[in-house]
Image (cartoon, rainbow, N blue to C red):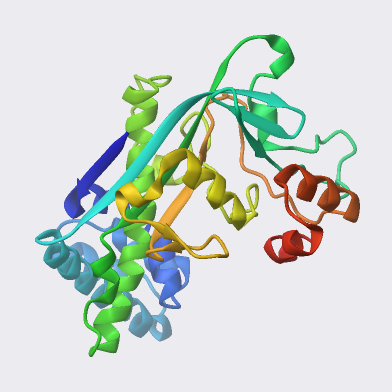
Length: 296
């Protein structure tokens, strides 16, 4: 399934905390994005800061104003895009089997736990085992922006950075909206979900959406597996030889519906798991080390 969104359709899903973080602002300044309405409301928000912090807060207010102005300009000429595939799935150990044939190797936590009774998690834990004989479902997705968006304002450093940081947020916001639409309609396992955008950002929905490169799915090379499943070029995404996506403002990953599914970090792994995982991926160990350097 391929979807296209106008900028205004996804901009309300932007998580402004990460936008402001990219500009060096602490989360407390990002709260300006929650202030809607009159100028007096914004003035009261500004007055709530200690005097020495007000110049920084005023900068945040101005940055948000310029970001919204830029979003309005982008809305006239650009869109965001998503591709999604819902597949029959089963788990066999630390592997997923998708649509009966595609093996998707995963990693399991291996580091010593603070509490002895804490499980060592793997994303495959949230899918029915192959031995059950019952099919489950897993989603694969990718989202991106129009490639030309990232190359606007080549001669204006400030506007170029503004567009690039907004493009990153728009790709993530597109994933947020796409995931919501899928939960409520396409997959339909949460048809009565009624959450605010803040609830979505706080992950109060059922299921998870781990993205490639994030703590529970750290191996960037699995983008090649996802590309085989999704044919990302349909929405303008290409992969480098290292599995990085172009445009840079792109997101890919998996979707799980299990009510107990949760986000977690793989953390450090040992040589034994590295060897096992490389074998399951069909890659040599030295090559695998490049993709899992942060986990070794």
